[in-house]
Amino acid sequence: MKLTLTGGCLCGAVQFSVKDEFKAFYQCHCKQCQQLSGSAFTSNILTAPTNIEWLKGKRNVTVYDHPTRGFSKSFCSLCGSALPFINKNKTTLIIPAGSLNELPDLKPQANMFTSEEACWLKPGLNAKGFSGFPE
Ligand SMILES: [Zn+2]
Ligand SMILES: [Zn+2]
Image (cartoon, rainbow, N blue to C red; front, side, top):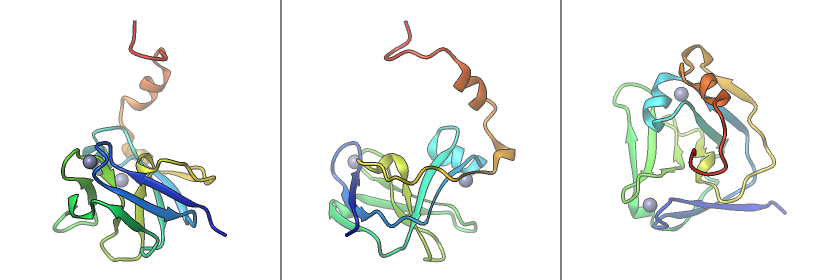
C-alpha cells in the first residue's frame, strides 16, 4: 500500500492528494526559477502526470506556460501559492515541495543550475538565525 500525501494552497481554496511514488526531488537555482518563485531556488518533486487527485478548487488553479521556452508555473488564482503542474511535454507532474502538507521520505537529490545561483543564497544561509522575527 502506498502512502497518500495531501497538499494545497495557503488560502485553502485548492487541495489535492498525490501518492508517494516520486521519481526525483530537485532544487533548481536558475534565473527563471528565481523569477517564478521570488526566492533563491525552487524545490520540486517529480512524479507521473497521472499521480494527482484534485480534492477541491481545481477551477482556481491558473497555469502559466512560457510561450517559447519550457517554463511553467501553476498557482492559486486567489492567493498565488505554487501548485503542481504537468510539464510542457506532458511527461512529468511537478510538485512544489512547499505545497505538500506532509513530506515524503525522499530528500533532495540534486541542486541544478548552480552556475546561476542567487548571490544572496550563501550569505543568507550564514546570516544570524532567530526562531521568530529578528530582534
Ligand atoms: Zn489559494
Ligand atoms: Zn529552474
